[in-house]
Image 1 (spheres, helix red, strand yellow):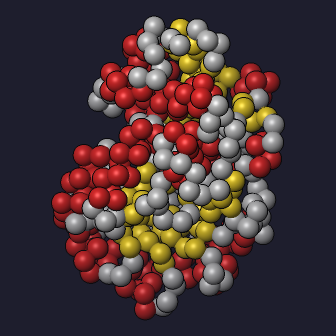
Image 2 (tube, rainbow, N blue to C red; image 1 turned 180 degrees about the vertical axis):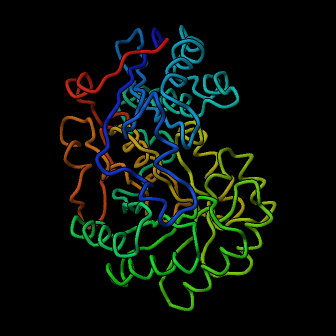
Image 3 (cartoon, rainbow, N blue to C red; image 1 turned 30 degrees about the vertical axis):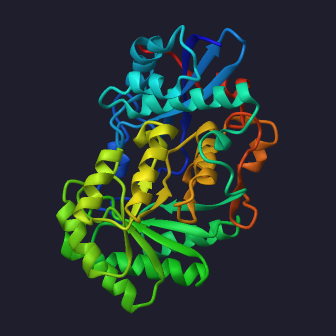
Length: 390
């Protein structure tokens, strides 16, 4: 079996709720403005679908998120990288040479583009072998995965109200966006805890917004008020591993690295600095499932756990995160699936409803069909497709 074509399609989905943008409340970063440009003036999320064809007639489907605000890779860059540079390097080659193929496209940067190709390649291999992707990368240790939703920054009452509404849709875990004034942020977390009760998982994400002393102050206030804060994500700037280590040493709340942890090499540096208890794996950030498993292995070898973070998605990426969760033993319970609350998944078949709210006891089922186990709805895809910008 040989690869005959690598194709891409871009789609754009409008957003009704704008993530991370509520008049700068709860964060020092103006999240709404970072994602809006003259070229993209309205709130939307854009994706690139990757299809890898073979001479056996099997096609693997992957998905790359694009985000100028977080990943720094707009849709035009991701699609051009796939079509003009990365995809052509795979033509005429055996897809089962996975490690060599992914090494050959592992240029600096372009993590989103590489992740789309990686997912399509894994989907292809699973289909060729008639097994789910999780069985390719470690097995099916979890049949269900607890879903965690991110809560956009806002007023304490507003954030608590949003969480209470999502609890009614079966959600049992939340990650609140904080990172502004610790005294105000602890009131937001307290309001959420009061609204959802003691049994709901509660995390917080500072998005690099605190100084080390501010982060320590927030954690100690949460501890004194017994808010049950499980972890604090990226409390200080990503380059300040010494500051993050200072926070970790001073508090009982688990400290999680996100923006500081793109690659296995980054995680090695975090381990050496003793800067985190937990590593956030995002498939787009890592460059695909192959590198995500390497990050998990480095973390496990150092005695650290991992979580899988929100990385947006039309359905293919959601399935990939479920397979990664099912196959990774050193994973903390609770995978972030905020994308389920932002727009519809462009799926058809049973997974179109199985991977959508309301959740079954807070969980999503791992799709166990061949490959990633999901099918894109081609009619919906055409409705949202955007032209190429080459």
